[in-house]
Structures are given as structure tokens and as C-alpha cells.
Length: 140
Image (cartoon, rainbow, N blue to C red; front, side, top):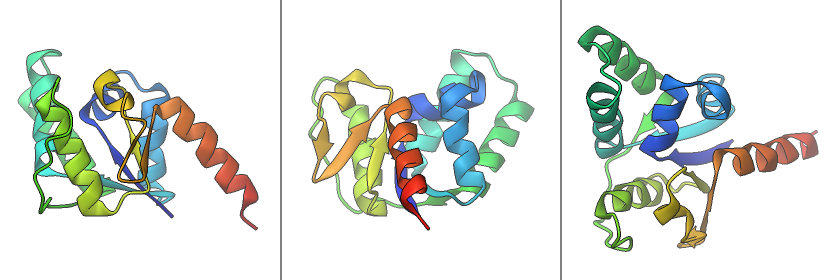
């Protein structure tokens, strides 16, 4: 099973719009990927959904419960300061390192510019799904 960390942009897009980001959440719910999340990523996701998309408290509680059920919670042990343009993006890297993720899925241009971080590729959700489907096709 692939160990994956997704940034808050992916989680927000999945919950707000569906599409390919929701496919990633569905894969986590089905046990096809192990999706890591940290308190920082969860907090940022819920904050944006509340402030930008004006989601109700009840909706946010349901979203939080769902994310907690389908993800693996990690507590980063290391502070990373690699992305200077948007320091909050470093929380995603911290989560990926703590989870020993094999890939980081992001919609953030500052993160995607890195290409890889400590050997972990950073991919858009579309690129991840293509690569994952290829991985699935190779399995017996």
C-alpha cells in the first residue's frame, strides 16, 4: 500500500468540489492508500473551509470526523524550514517525513517546485493517479 501525504489544498478540493482529489480520499477510505495527516494539515483544512467557503460547524465536524476515520494521524518530530515563500507549506513536508510517505500530493505551486524532498516525489493529484493506476496494473 502506498503511503501518501496530501496538502490541505487537496483535502479542501476533495471536500468542496470532488473530482480527482476526492478520488484520492476514496482510495484512502477503501484502504488502497495510507493517507497521512497531521494536526497542522487538519487545522488548516478546516480553517479554510470555514473562512473561505463558510461551511457550518456541523458540516466541519462531519468533515473532521470523516478525515480522521480515513487517514493515519502522525505527529511530526522535526521542524522543517525548506519552503521560504510560504512557511506553512513546511508542515506538509514535516507530516510526510514523520509518516515515511512515498509521495506527497499537492496543488501548491511552492511545494510542487521542489519536485522531490528527501527522496519523496511531489506530484499533482492527476499525476499521482496516473502513476498509481500504473502501479495497480503491475500488481498480480
